[in-house]
Length: 229
Image 1 (cartoon, rainbow, N blue to C red):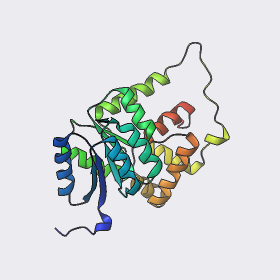
Image 2 (tube, rainbow, N blue to C red):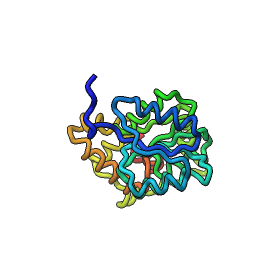
Image 3 (cartoon, rainbow, N blue to C red):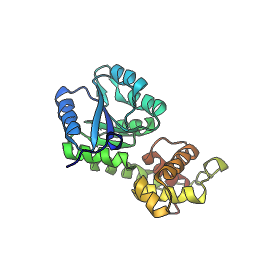
Image 4 (cartoon, rainbow, N blue to C red):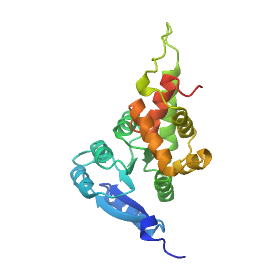
């Protein structure tokens, strides 16, 4: 098998304090033919310092770090490294940790009970424009949608769609692809545009809906009635 050129490899960074899990995941990434491990941090402070020179495509962040929360690293990475895709890798599967992570800018959420192969698949999916989420976490997000979809008594009017969050026809198309789980590459093929253009539309959608992740965009769009469902 020929080695891939360095500029086509998925550059990965890792913030993980559990040395056994860190070593196992780092070895798996190094062994993957399409990935390169750029840097590893074991604490919140190291993770924040790492961001100053980070050039990774995917950043995996544990939440339970010895000197603080990994959510702080996610929030800082989302602000400093907007082109880096962030995925949580943790043992915490409760709603509070999930929603805080997604609100901070994470685009995926994987539990550590996933196999290393699933972790690598999640990295590839995230890099391709997907949002890898462990089944348990996806179920929680769906339950949250359902709870918010329940009509109040007495019924209340839906939030008005203001010019600020009104989407163009093309943005609506991209949004519907997001809700159906299509990656940026798949959306680009279906719409006949480039992957870069799709990602530009995604950023515009995030800005108009005032969200930071695909999960938040779907939730907000449903709340505003933008999906026509």
